[in-house]
Length: 285
Image 1 (cartoon, rainbow, N blue to C red):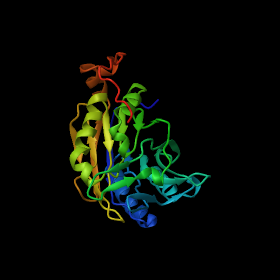
Image 2 (image 1 turned 90 degrees about the vertical axis):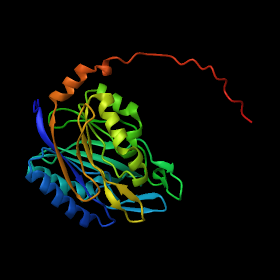
Image 3 (image 1 turned 135 degrees about the vertical axis):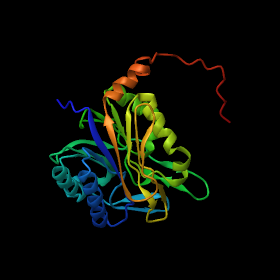
Image 4 (image 1 turned 135 degrees about the horizontal axis):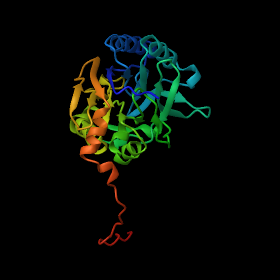
């Protein structure tokens, strides 16, 4: 259907606040910049507009999908720039009051092409008082999603999902040539793991990784790492957003996906295996 092999992708890097309308205005400015440079795929971070954090719990601005102001605003921009726009995520309130951390892929006509609810919840204790309990306020999803996009399918994921390699393997085997990892990665974990994990996901799957990440200090004091990344299927970083507001660009050439997978066809080399446990189970006290 869509045989575009080469196009420009962009990642937007912003710092969301509890003021969703102010955030939308900043996103519109940055998306406009990306569109003016000819980007055909424009990716925004996780919780890209309307986010508060209180004592390690995430409190996104959340309303039902039909009422969420980010969707019409970004749909209008998708139409204006004739671009695919990945809304990394926004808070969506379900009928029963639960909140989902939901990603949207918008087609160039502004229509919703895919939705993905973050599967893995960020419930961690990093020490020194840095703890997070995403599951205290957010409902996990249960379905991996392969979204239509320019050039071919993109596997959707969000932030903490990055640590679960099997998700990306499944997406790649289902046909993903690109993997999206919108995030609001913390500074502590970002400095240690962000570049390595994103490069690993690209290398393991012979896929492009497009990973827009928030930067700066969120309301409530949590710090995001920035360093939005676009990585090629060989694991090379094509663009890095540093630690300020802005837009990064890279040319995507999907011929590189088949070329890389041809060189190292590990996606076709998985073999079943069993595990032999030589260590006795520890008896319960």
